[in-house]
Amino acid sequence: MGKIVYDVQYQTSMAFLISYYFYLTGLSAGSFMISTLSYGFGFEKFKPAGKIGVVVAVILLLMAPQFLLMQVAWPIKSVWNHFVYLNPVSAMTYGAFLLMLYPVNSIIYGIFMFKGNKKWTRIFGTIGIPLALAVHGYTGWILALGVARDYWNTGLMPIVFLFSAMVSGISMMILLIMIRDYFFTKSRDVNYDLIYSLAKILGWLLVVDLFLVFCDYSVLLYSKLEGQEVAHFMLFGKMFLGFVVLENLIGKVIPLVIVMVPKFRENNYLLILAAVMNMIGILAMRIVTVYGGQVLPLM
Amino acid sequence: MSKEKKDTQLPRWGMVIDLNKCIGCHTCEIACKVQNDVPLGIWRTWVKEIEKGKYPNVVRAFRPTLCNHCENPVCVKVCPVHASYQREDGIVMVDPHRCVGCRYCMAACPYEVRYVHPQKGIIDKCDFCYHRVEQGLQPACVEACPTSARVFGNLNDPKSEVSQLIATNAVQNLKTDMGTGPRVYYIGLDQATMEIKREVEFVWEK
Ligand code: SF4
Ligand code: SF4
Image (cartoon, rainbow over the protein chains, first blue to last red):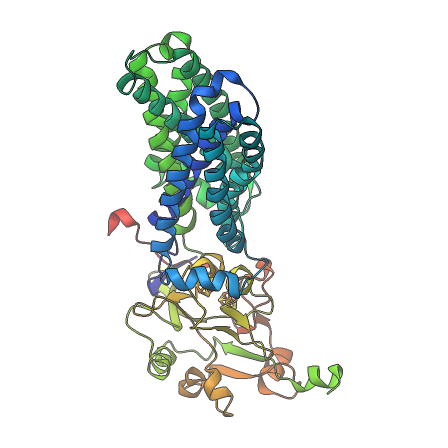
């Protein structure tokens, strides 16, 4: 093999802004789903999470596209052109529609919820679930259809993104419900029944998430050269800290142990720690996937 | 015009680069920069230089790099606003009025030949000097090459120099496994020169 003597610098196409955008849409989709557990599916236990879930989902989803627009050089033109020169085979086209439909639906759902109209809340909650799945699933598709990068180009990508969205969303809900119950109620009693149920769901979703990562990597390590290279880069190379330590150890494995062992779970400090660590880990996951997935040279 | 007639009459532009003739002088790089007003920090075409072997048994190899004007371009597929498009004569273009600078095409192109224009924020890449080609001239890099290593022409015409070169030489395209159908052909491209990768500077090293 040879050695490069002269070559030019290449630019990074997507990095932090897109990672934050993916992170916030993920949190939004996750909290929306928790909100629909009671109002859409009728699990009464989760009712106290319903209103806060939808409020947070809407706020986050209004924030998220700002990062996207900051990344795009011509933000206003981009919104206009998406409709006028629509390309039906680009994943990004659908994103533009979803980013408009999903918050509108969430707002309508929230209004009915606050008005106490059960029937319409359930209807809009049910419409919202596929929308929430789509709005976050499509971010995975955007990467998966970036066919040049082996790390991205897998059918698992949208699913990996959905599960990481749900875990980070639940962690955020655990923290927010604790804060709300402790600081903003007169009695100051935290609804532990709800918190522990959420923690258990978090645990099982983390198991699925880790399993998906395992599937992805076991295939990458056996795949063609570029796939092997990127897997080594993530597992043993310069992304070790980001991928192994931050994303998986701090972000998933330690929180999993905490929420699965009843003694740890019932310790408030540990539970808060688990939720915070998980939120940091999923942010790391977005950056590792978006930046780390494309930084290796193709040519 | 019947369809048959149209297909044979329309040119399909392509390029053949003879690496045996390339002397690594970077003239094409400069000619392109001047012709297309390509700003500092980005390139529409450039010459990779590779050192093969171990000292003292070393040899230099060169590979001029540019957009492959693929037959089935991924960049066109992923562009959400049809800013990247393929002309009937095969040239893959970026419409500067439509491009919004989302960089999706950059992430999808397997050849790393798309750049963000530092002032305009939109995508800049080789367009085979279509403005010259339409006037019957050669692209600037082809005209500037002192050893005629680059040859440009109509792939649909069996008598053109490119077609003749492709017919009579062993030629290779880059990354045919991506299904993009590149239309830049290389003569004398070996494995090492094809597979060599640029060096990367990570964000935390900057
Ligand atoms: S080389 Fe890249 S930019 Fe050029 S046509 Fe092919 S996919 Fe598009
Ligand atoms: S950067 Fe421009 S050409 Fe590339 S996909 Fe986005 S709009 Fe299309």
